Length: 242
Image 1 (cartoon, rainbow, N blue to C red):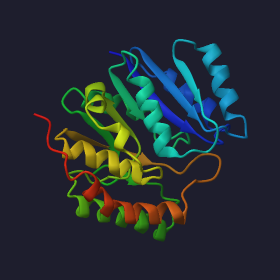
Image 2: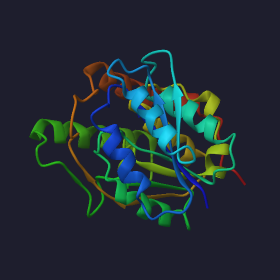
Image 3: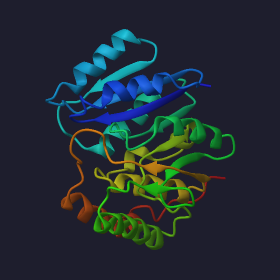
C-alpha cells in the first residue's frame, strides 16, 4: 500500500540529497516523498526538483513563496496527499534527526493503530548525547507540561516523526489547525486524541542535525507554552468519532 513522506525544508541543501537517497532505498513498496520548500535561499528547492527529474514517480515538490512556517507546510502537504490515493502519510525532519530506517517500524505499527510516532521518551528512546543538560531538561519539561495539561496518552507530544493512516487525517479538521511552530505537533496529537484515534509510540534516538543550524527559537518555545492552554478552548466541541 502506498506511502508518502512529507518533508518541510528551509535551507537544507546539505542534508536533503542524502536523506532522499536513504529514504528511496528503503524496502517499502510504493514509497514516495513530498518536499515542501519555503523558498530556501540556499537552493534546497532546486535540489528537490533535480531529484524529481531523477525519480519522477517517487519525488514531488511543493514550492512556497517564503518562510511560512512548519505547521502550514505540513497542512499544505497533508491536503496535497489527500487529493491522491495514497494510504499512509508521514512527516519527518530534513536534518537526519529522524533515522530513515525507523519508517519501517512506524509503518508496521499502523497495522493496528491510526497514527504511529517516533518517541524519545519511552523505554528505548533517547536524545543525542551532545545535547546540553539544560536543553534536554527543557525538552523533557515541555513534553511533560503539554501532556499533563491536555491529558494526552502519549509521552512524546512534541515529536515530529509520525506516520498517519489516510483515513485518520481525512477525519481531522485540518482547516482548524493554526499552530505554525513546533506546537503544531502538540495540536495535531490533541485533535487526534479528542477524536478517539489510537496512537502508538515507537522508540527512536533523536540525533543532532548533521549540517546547518537548528530553527528552534525562544519565540517558538513561548508560543508552545501559551498555545497549549488555548487548545483546550479551541477544540472543546470535539467528540470521539463513532
